[in-house]
Length: 418
Image (tube, helix red, strand yellow):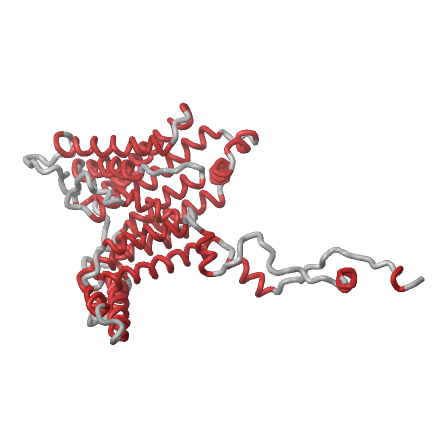
């Protein structure tokens, strides 16, 4: 038999086994957490560009850039580094203070700002996991503040009992307002986006009326503001009167643990996730989908209500108005998206946004950088999170599910190819 007649056997490609470290690196780079981190990095980079372009020294040095380019580059560096340094010192630690107790005060402010964001973000995230887009945080916070605030200033109860009563009233108020949305979806099929938006307006005008002419009005005052909460219903300070950090932060840590347990370890949480993934399959499996919608919005509204009562009992203890939500209800959507709707991710995202809020005031006072820059950075974070392919393309990250490398041909295949 001649050489040309010798049969050549072919086999299937044998992919090369990736190493342990390569597998770990690929798991990290294709995960969702890295997209969130890189979205923050990209937003900060774009924020730095905006700071540089809007700085007056940079604009002046740009006029003679071709004669002395280093002046413009130096001005850009001074503007960006000064702004972000002020952001850090206003949110984490101020190195210009004389002692550690004073230097750490910015971090306590960050945690104070983060407390309602975390609580509201947990509520929105839980709704996401159950397949419901809860954008009614504003209304749920207002109802929680109204009911809990009334208990805080109108009732005379012993210390401890008064605080718990106001807290429970606020959480139940938020749960009630969120439960209406779940009930409407379960019974009529009304979309939660529409109903939450409408209930935001209902809550705002209802609370505004109650502050002007209802049971929330301060006697003898024309100012639409409630009376101050009584001392027996105010969150105690965690680190003393020199800091604003209060018991509310401990409560949101507990709320984070509860939400994590609910979603990851409980049967009800499993049903939330199943309905969120595919309500039709969940119904075929025998799950009460309509009741799950109601339960999910009750708990979601209660968590958002915790953010509302936190404002009344911890931040605005001297009385509150119809703007007590301070856009927290909408910022919570961003926090939930950045945290990938996972409880501990939401916790970290809330602290990050609390740092942005605390540091932005220092950045504006020290460097003259508008607070609006931070708002733009937050919006950019959402934009980049919503476009994972863009982030992967910028940083050359592998696509999830794609093969790690081209399979190597064996000897028989190489002979056959020739």
